[in-house]
Length: 303
Image (cartoon, rainbow, N blue to C red; front, side, top):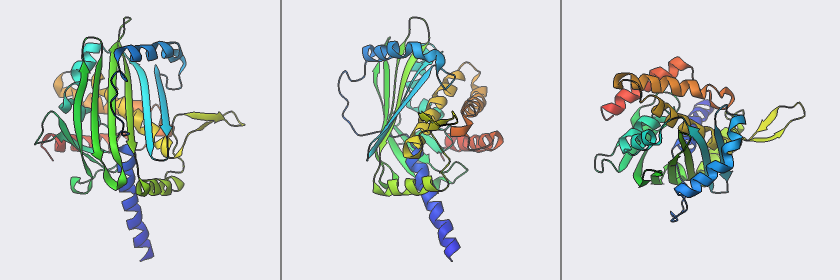
């Protein structure tokens, strides 16, 4: 009896954690005019440009994260070798975001909402393995393009409520073209969490998640090895990176014939996560590909 109870408890905890650490999320704050703009993003690019040739990611990319007692936010700034027109055109449609999000191993389903196509997305999140939709929590994200012009693009995905006390979910992407070619993007991923979610996360991180880390190096140990951030903030960093890599994989597959794009997205996303095995390895390639092919098929037929 005690063993059955323990097993049931962990199943609930794992489901909660999948929702807590893997859903696209956002801290509650008003959209301040001028807070995000082409000028401010270009200034950020100029400040980071000289650092991109020597980052830990082997990519022109910077990851920042922050944590308070109730909120988490992760930010990635990166150079992408795609024309600005390709980025803004591809990501201005809500349905294309489902092709991005489904690459994440914890996203089980994403489709435009029936009642509000083009502005709302129905998303199911869950375990890293195959899962029926009726036990994968559902969330409704409001999608909007806040700005689109020849020199700036910004879009949001927001959800007021999430499972187990999570709320104020936000996923934001902004981008500018660069004179030297390519596109500079800023991806922000954030959410607020309550007491229940915090307790579950702490329990997980003390047991099954005790060896999981993020990307920020807190210090060098006496043997010269890096001490990486862990805990809730580490989980945030891992998922911020997973979503960035999903965007990159989606854009990279657009040059392929339509019937070949899904397979290229899946393989490229998995390969890119395996560049950081300490932080991002969860499944073998065959397991991931088999699961995602099934989930994509389910997504296309509407569940």
